[in-house]
Amino acid sequence: MIVKFWGTRGSIPVPGNSTVNYGGNTPCVEVRTKEDILIFDSGTGIRELGNQIISEDNIKDLHILISHYHWDHIQGLLFFKPLYDEKYRISFYGPSTADYSVNMLLSSQMGNINFPLSIKHVKAKISYQSIYPNDKITIGNINVYSLMANHSSPTLVYKFTYNNSLIVYMTDNELKAEPAEDTIEYKSLVEFCSNCDYLIHDTMFDEISEISKKGWGHSSNISLANFAIESKTKNIILFHYNPDHDDVKIESLLEETVKHLKERGSSINCVAAKEGLEILL
Image (cartoon, rainbow, N blue to C red):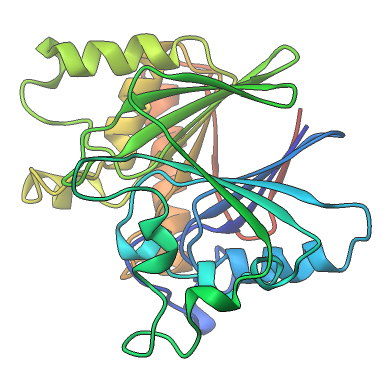
């Protein structure tokens, strides 16, 4: 299994010289096995992933799992070329409520007010499936589990297993909702992530700015490190960067996290997600 990062940024894309190392595209993570391709979120990073997919002749089935419908997690979808090619079968999964369904992900974005193409221009064979907290679904040989994140909009955490590997994708999640360690929700997240091989997690803030941003639905690198120790995570991946954090800032957050883990006597490995990073399991 290969996990590849195509977009790592939160809120808005931030292209430019100051973000060239870690990337300026918004969230998109590809999980590829010999049998299946799963795509987590469709931020602007999905455009380049789509270009890669159409260059390969043997791919027909794609599975796109949306954590939530904030703009930065869906804004690249309409530039995903397989969407307009009839040879592809694309299955969408995501949270659903009485106010919106998964298929609104497409229809609400397309039309002459927001976009020059309409839903009728979509040629791929599309299907939709609602995912609810505490669900389990199977996609090919991959088991996917869900849990509700602590965010301002209904947001799902996805845990997926393949062979003996266990990975958690937890973007847009606030860990330090006081008193975090005493809440049922926090304990549920710890249990959900217990002994995972990799935890991909929101690090929108540094430790200082996190204090003034309570209730915003995001976390700091230090809160993530402490959570990883508690959940016995093996590897953490800093993700969903603040658009104001350039490469230098992200590098300092990585160094600070590594130092904090070491000071707490932890052997957890920490890396910072960057566009093009591949994790082989």
